[in-house]
Image (cartoon, rainbow, N blue to C red):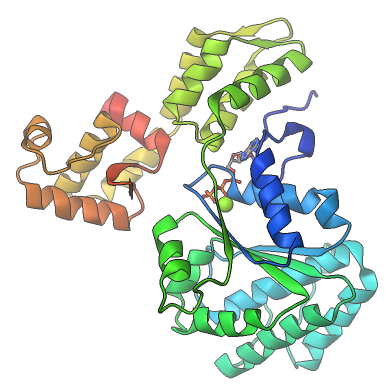
Amino acid sequence: METNPFYTTSVIPAPFFCDREQETESIIRILTNGNNLVLKGPRRLGKSGLIHHIFEDKRICDHYNTFYFDIYATSTLEEFTLLLGRAVYASLASRKKKAADAFLSLLRSLSLKVGMDPVSGALMPGLGFGDVKGNELTLNEIFDFLEKSDTPNIVAIDEFQQIQHYSQENMAALLRTRIQKMNNTKFIFSGSERHMLDIMFASQDNPFFKSARNVDIAPIPEDVYCDFARRLFLQYGKQADEDAVLYVYHLFDGVTYYMQETMNEAFSLLREGDTLTRGVAESIVDRLVESNTSRCLDILDDLTLIQRRALGAIAKEWRVADLTSSAFISKYRLSSASSVQSATRALIKKKLVVRERSTYFLQDKYLALWLKANY
Ligand SMILES: Nc1ncnc2c1ncn2[C@@H]1O[C@H](COP(=O)(O)OP(=O)(O)OP(=O)(O)O)[C@@H](O)[C@H]1O
Ligand SMILES: [Mg+2]
């Protein structure tokens, strides 16, 4: 079977990774100069992919141990420590057996119940950590272990804003105190909640103040993505019209995830010698959007009537600057400015709507297009 060159996972082999050259250079410079990094950007633009891409770069993988973990689904120090422990073990086990063994005996010496999956060799979820103090100790021991290694380390903590929701209120302070003292280990903090990260890193009275350099990612420029996609089709004896790719780019506001999914689907449907025209692209997108129907209905089911109307209205407008304008309210029968405001607040809290530079829009482009077509 032929491989599809349009990857929809976040680990992408270099030849199929589009652009991000400037960002890659800046990040490598920041890290190799001994600084920590905050990597921010809207959802699904390619932050996680960029971290993996950088970890594969010779300038990084030849000189550093790299560790990646995603704390989106965690809410305690215990889970954080467990994921860090697993990331460290998994990365060492794949490359440095001796260091991995040493790490495992460290964990055991901390009298942790370390289980191992007999097949994959991965650390098992059943790791038993004790009380919070014990976790803090374990976390410190893991960081000490990294500090002592012959090779310097880079630890990437993805979805970092999640630590704001931890049951330990001082999580940010605890990490900061420890991280500040580390010389042999640098950190990448990555996340999509721009505002939260700004609060965490940019406010003076916050513990993370000024502890890291910033890189903010934006959509890949349209001409760059267009050349990339058309080149990949050509490499496999297929073609894509420029206006087809540009249609997809603009429809999804240049958000990488949706463009890659569409191109992946297009690639799989086209035979050798076929061309992706704008018409074909439109029908592929329509089908992708329709395939989200039951998910969209589930989302709507969880909303109140006014929230549903507000969501539908924002989707139809695509981007709304003034939610309380009388034109907007009467066009979508939204009753009053205050009810739109409170409905939108709820939608933001549910992560369905985002506010960026004082405009409101739907985070999920499939949902937005589905509502546009069906609501
Ligand atoms: N440079 C790139 N070239 C090709 N595809 C990419 C690139 N960057 C991202 N993608 C694709 O876009 C999708 C989203 O990427 P990724 O998961 O890295 O985004 P993210 O910003 O971390 O998203 P989230 O906010 O949901 O965590 C993935 O399917 C990935 O394959
Ligand atoms: Mg991500």
